[in-house]
Length: 228
Length: 300
Image 1 (cartoon, rainbow over the protein chains, first blue to last red):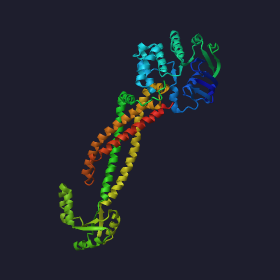
Image 2: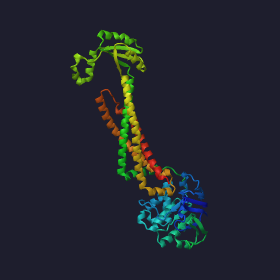
Image 3: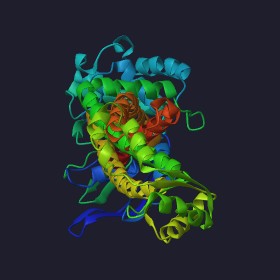
Image 4: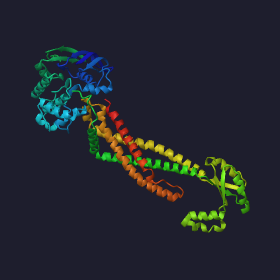
């Protein structure tokens, strides 16, 4: 579960990134966070991953309090979150399989579990036949699915996707959203930060709209606001 | 699936990744190892010289003999008569008279092949009659020398203890140089390791940022780089040890030949201590250098 309560984030005297932001995302929800560039979306994502700490207010992620979390506990918080980026951020010289296996290794998973889990997750994102390829041998959509497999493989409570369709064509974008929906149906909370009006309106999920560091709308089954 | 409780250090993985880092930056690794080995060699040479001086000083200081030179103005009989006065000085155990002719012969003997140069002086012997005084207690050396010098007819004294005091002065200088070198070259070595590891981390920054993002602990991320730094350090230590073997042999041979009195310990007498000491020092340099870089790099 994610909960922000009266969160203020001030970078310096002139930059106020978040201004009294409160919302809550329950386990198993699928939520879009929308808003123009510079509205504060990225700040929210950084807070959730404990890359930043709130200036004021409280941020709670899967039982961790971001304001007070100890430095050495941050890795354990991050194991409960899977992040997918717009630019995929895959390791170029590792195969698809190794890109995914590597993150299991990084959290100390035993080899026999890695060997079972990685093919399962690659199958889930439809890349079972691409496991030996290098990222550059894949299309953009496939690379993003590798990124999703990597985010999923440690079985996080929440998947956070930051503009996941930013580099994809409309058809691939729809496929990707369908994949995220499938993952959500399996019980994982999904939080998607996006600009894509069409996609948001098509899926009819909960939409939290942010502008100038404030929540201006939070509607379940909502639409991308026209004025954004 | 939370692996927190199942986590155990994956030694094979750390070794593989660490060693691959060294291979990846082969030239830089070779340069780093060479410079660090040179630093270690310089430091260990100075430390060994200081140690040898120490041993030499101790052995000289433990000599219980004092040479007492008789005033030239005294006749042979007067010189012989000094024996009683010398024996009456406290702490004197035994006294042996050495006439200057015998002293000259001994001197020629010491010179060996070069003795012919001095042979011409036999009739105009520049040496003095002397006594060899043996002390009961070496620790009372200074008081004994004072007592001997107070006797009329005694021109000068000489003992290994006096030489040992002079060597003590040299040793303090060598020690001071050693400390400065340890600090300076140690810092240089740490800096070099730290730079090499920085290069390795920079090449893998994307991987590191992904590892952080998925919740790898700093320990897990750092371990391969610590392995890399330590391996570079250990390699340098090993090379420096063998280089020291050669250099030490050369120095001790030269020093013994030119000084005539200064004896150095054989390498075999201390290599069993030197090798582990150098390996530990180089491993510490390696770990310290890598940890310094890692700490800076991982601060997010």
